Amino acid sequence: DGGITQSPKYLFRKEGQNVTLSCEQNLNHDAMYWYRQDPGQGLRLIYYSQIVNDFQKGDIAEGYSVSREKKESFPLTVTSAQKNPTAFYLCASSPPAGGRAVKYFGPGTRLTVL
Amino acid sequence: AQTVTQSQPEMSVQEAETVTLSCTYDTSESDYYLFWYKQPPSRQMILVIRQEAYKQQNATENRFSVNFQKAAKSFSLKISDSQLGDAAMYFCAYRSPYNNNDMRFGAGTRLTVKP
Image (cartoon, rainbow over all chains, first blue to last red; front, side):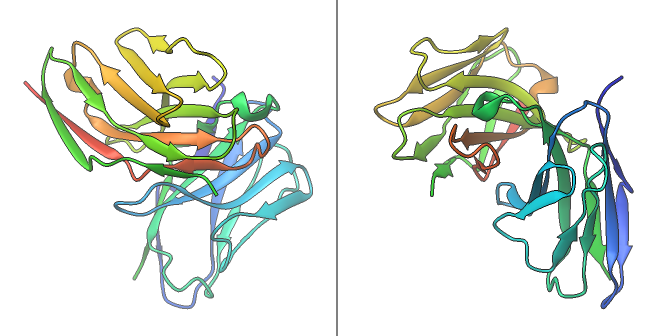
């Protein structure tokens, strides 16, 4: 079955540590996205990538980094510079159909800072 | 920048009844796309329904339908014959055709379905 996988489901980080969240898709989508979800707020865009080896900052990119070495993979690193990283992180992808394209979401990763 | 507002943080409905979730948005664009996503307790975001602004006809998907009022910038979701499995967070989202990467989400409405 085609879809998006995220791992791990739950992640705990100590203060000062960098952690990397995995996102893999086998939908052959060009575009991939990372969103952050906090209670009482909608999803906010962290980073996106339209093509391999290219990515752009979203609204809240500070303290995060990404890479896009393969079409299928778009890992997100939460660095120690992110002051409030505890949140739910969602990865998404979409085909190249313009604005009407539906975004498909992964199951998410819950990150907690200890 | 476009903004999306969901004014109902929580709603409840009796099983088999009908409920309407509200969404308004602010934009200066004439063409755009609107979406309703469902996020059940599993946290997986699932597309419920999509509406293209240039289409006057309201989108429907089985028990789900929208009331799209372009002039009022309103995009409400109606769930008919509510089922226990409809219990979830529902997010309204706006997407510009000029910026494929930008999808604006509302804060969500938590829907409870009472048996």
